[in-house]
Length: 390
Image 1 (cartoon, one colour):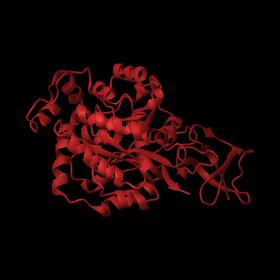
Image 2 (cartoon, helix red, strand yellow):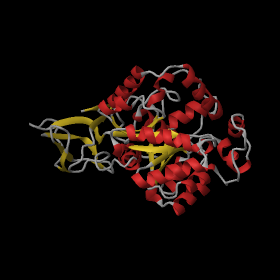
Image 3 (spheres, one colour):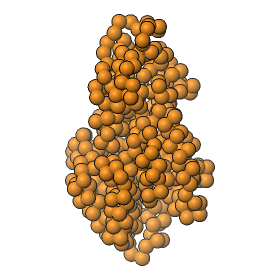
Image 4 (spheres, one colour):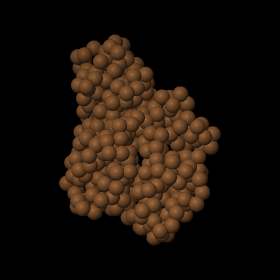
């Protein structure tokens, strides 16, 4: 049995200054309770300088793309990035070693659970043996052509995934999935009661594509098709995807750089706040096109939001601390409490992993990490802030 104290314990929801965490030797939470002013040295009690927190949950990653690190130039824009990924996946062989290194890097950075995008089964064996709990989203896209073949491919991958409770079929993005394919994914999600993720409004031309049938993304994909991409118009791409997955229990909308206040109100009215999460991947957005997610709007409307690192194809690291520090620098009004809540419980809830991860609560096994070298007086992260498993 371990008794753990620190300057602060973050329980997944709030900071507790004078508290003690009790966990079994295998990491299961036994209790958390208030204590007198902590003494740094006390027999049988571990004391740490900094903040004790549940392990981080990375709500959006692409482990498969680890071999593309440094291969795509920064700030070229989403249309060029999408084209580069499609080309490089054909030119550069998949690397299991690169994926293993990324997996280890995430674990060493305090990440205990990951929402990971997979197009193939190449990473499945690694995920089975990793100390990280993955929820795998099998990503499908048909470019508005043969939805039946793509859906059957997805179902085959779904059945081959051993941890059936931790796998979903999901569309890549509104612009790369037909209504027919979306309908098939929705029905499958309802049957198996899993969350669905989708890349959403990552570039201004995505909305233009759906509202006006024009723009950079429209031109990129139109070249690959023999018939029009869309047969009707929508106020935004989100209106297409939200309407296509009305029956899904929980949706993760990822990136959301060009999500408007109008779209947020629409989601709150149509889905309800508990049935969707907006995932922000700030470092990836800055890498691709130097844009920020609309975090102030999420705060204004009390939208549930979580944090993802995205892949090493569009990021220089897979560190949740770096993501949180970047968010703090871009949005000084965001508190450390809000950042840690998004990086722990909110991510776990989005992936339907809250029964184990995201909070210090009796019977859960969320991992125990130490965040050190902070500005504890002002409760702010610093460039020197580090994290480690304890």
